[in-house]
Length: 128
Image 1 (cartoon, rainbow, N blue to C red):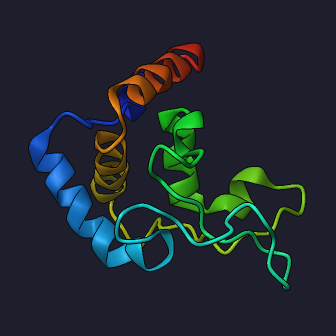
Image 2: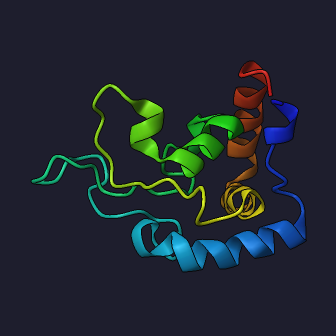
């Protein structure tokens, strides 16, 4: 299972699909350039964190592929649990598994080589 979760970030066709899906589904909150919303580390008046960046300045790459897919499928609240509040919805039923993997592959393909190397180590440590 863990190997199946690995993101095909070096597959140009998958990355191109991911860029299109990201633009249509994710950019409105996470930014056209993966920059996230301003002040993304501080909760707003309603207690929610703004959408974080998915570029190297964010924390997306701190999580293994399988966890990123789970967040995309079920949403942040469902994955974190314990009353954690998030506006990040789950996309299961809205996006196909292939589209979800493609979005994450696109995001990963934009990271600098060193960040990708660290992320690959995180995947190995997570059993992926």
